[in-house]
Amino acid sequence: MSEDFAPVLVGLFAGGIGLSFLLADRQSPSSRAFALALGLLALMFASAPVRGPGLFLAPEVWERLTGLLEAAILLASCEWLYRVSRTMAPADPRSGRSARLLRSAQIFAVAYGLTAVLFVAARRRYSQGGWGPEVLLEPLFFLVLGPSLISFVLAVAGAVLVARSEIDVAERLRLRAAGLAVPFLFSGLPMQPPWEYLTTAIGEIIFLAGSVQYYVLQGKRGQFLARFLSPQVAQLVRERGLAAALERRRAEISVVAFDLRGFTAFAEKASPDAVMEVIQDYYAAIGEEVTRSSATIKDFAGDGILCLVGAPLPQSDHARRALALALAARERVSGLLTRRSGASLGLGVGVASGPVTIGAVGGEARLEYAAVGPAVNLAARLCEQASAGEVVADAATIAEAGAGAAADFEPGGSLSLKGVTLPVAVYRVRANRV
Image 1 (cartoon, rainbow, N blue to C red):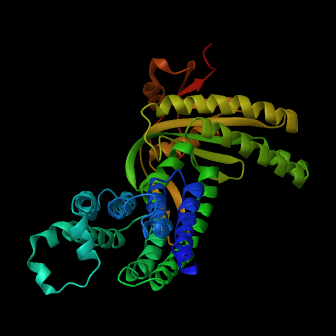
Image 2: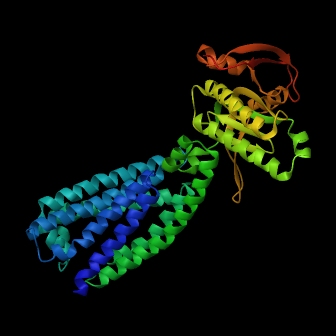
């Protein structure tokens, strides 16, 4: 009885790991693919006691279903590796090669499933062993078992390419855990019960232990994404990895700079607790408006906040979004500051658009999402010129926004700004259009 339950327990363990991936990380295509592979593995092991005596179905039917399950497991595993390969930098030449290898492996996995259905007796004979070298001269041997062997070799080759490339850090941790577990998982194939179940269970435990690191890193990453990046960027990170979202590149974006007017005088008079409450509410209000605009917060610096619209995800209407963000934040924060400090605080906003270089900078211990270009400095300088409750934008933003922008503009002349060589034509953004 205990031997009958051994495969069921192994299968339940595999299914539990797969279910945990699906529930904890269901937005990730790679996690969904791997959860499917583990679910199919669980089904194959859990059905072993029923398949053995041929209950409910004829033995030949069970053998066909087993072959299809094995092919499906291989197919889903290759899909997981393919999804992991998608987290490589697009410029990496190994990205295309690994994708072709893994797609080819899936084609041969499908072929293996077809041969398992069509050649039941031959598959039983070759898979049970007991044959000599003479079978290598039989074309049927290669027809039946060849596709599975070729699929496995192609999958391993693709996995090696993926492992040697710059993939998402969290996916590398999971891939490494799978690599350590695979020898134990496959070493059980030639063994007889209960040893095959023991080695498979050891492989599952190794994989589970290594995957804990994946969960921890994804949890920390989720906290970062929720606070600083838009939901669209968070989705990109889940699908393509952090490297793809933070890859360094040139982009046309709009930059919005916020700064509190009268904050220094307020901080000198108010209690530290009152100052912290104002800053907390101010950050929270700006953060909510940034999320609604699908923008990204680049910096919190005291009472100053710098936001990027159109990065990391490109947005063709970044200028319109930036102006809408500036106006919405002005209305939201103005009411907040009046309640918190009376009339002593106000919000100044600067908006500028142009080409910048965006991407992650820093070392292994700390990464920061940076944007470098004239538009970043210009937005900060325009913010300095904005009085309380005022939004100042450059001509590039107004031109890029076009007639469809939901705002009225008033020319503000030309300003000579610190760090800017030539005078800058500016506009005062008055109010939302009705």
